[in-house]
Amino acid sequence: MTTYSDSGLRKPARGQRSNDMRRTNMSMVLRRIMLSPGETRSETARALGLSAATGTNLVNELIEFGLVRELEPKTGVLGRPGVPLAIDGRRRAVLGIHLGPRTTGVAIVGFDGTEHVSVLVPHAGVPAPEALEMVAGAARDLVADCPAGVSIVGTGIASGGIVDRRAGTIVENPVAGWRDVDVRGQLSGRVPEPIIVEQNARAAAQSELLYGYGKTASSFVLMVVTADVGSVSVHDGIIRAGYRQSAGNIAHLKVTERAIPCDCGRSGCLKAVATDDAVERMAAEAGLAEVPEFADIVTRAADGDPVAADVLGRRSRYVGRAAAILMDIIDPEYLVIAGTVAETPQYLDMVRAEADLYADSASNASARIVTSLSNEMSLTLFAATTIVAAALDDPVGHLSTVDDAPGAR
Ligand SMILES: [Zn+2]
Image 1 (tube, helix red, strand yellow):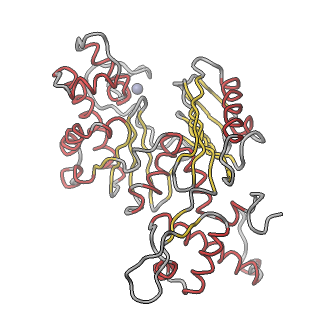
Image 2: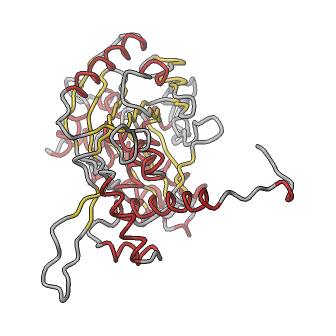
Image 3: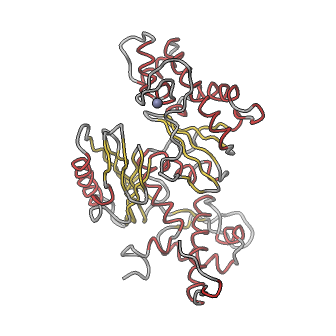
């Protein structure tokens, strides 16, 4: 980090300062419209403490940028009808890529989160460089098929395992068997830029910030339970990645004394008892006929099969114990649960009850455990959200690299 003595500090030139201010204000206005759609120009300006003239100018620029659009005017009000605003998902879009261990989802997603077109690329057992070649080919075809008038302003890529967002690499994805994969390097020049490579759970937390609990709370912990387990801590709207960018690794939290082996060599880890795979294994051990897949176990439990219901209940209690530990350590406003546990809300009460048993009794843990509001979104949409968030932070800077942005030539 560079430090300056007081006398060495140089004030930015006046033009520079007003330009920075404009960029900051534009980011604020765009974020406000994202989080509170339906407000008029003057309502948005008032909420942000800006003058009506400044607010109007900024909104007009955002409309010119293709990021904001006007909805039908509000009628039935005295005076001039106000024009409500919303994010424009029709002109600006993002390429979202969820690099799965066996199948990769590629989609073109509007800035408002709507999906334009998508394709799945199966690559089970294919080494990373070849799999990325297949993904690049599918992305090229999809971009070529993109509806006219939509411009793609970047590519957001998400993967499981440990992802170094700064370097744009997958450090390790044990499920896929990938190590040290230079994703950004290999896709650079072949997909719309900039390219952001992010970890699945952090991308999900970014989506929760923009489309879910982030609308009402700026500090929460997201816990994802699917084929893998992970958590992300969001504090004051900032996603904490950690020193090694592997913060929130809860896979090997010990949640039971039972001798259930984990692939790390120890036993009783959350990963060994709470993932979808673990549920399948527990179901097989409990004698559930024909060793069904996870979705079948959920269906059977819903149909009244006591063995299937018992296995899902056990998993929910283990998730509750891990949730209790996170609640006690981080003390978030909400603990947001995403993934397959959130898709079976009948088990959420078990998660809550177990969290109350294990967390500090004064913490009122169960009342703060909720299910994700962006749970309907796919991992491909989560991937795309990383670019949307970057553009919200600095719409001018982000879009000035796009050919058809106003003023760019
Ligand atoms: Zn373990």
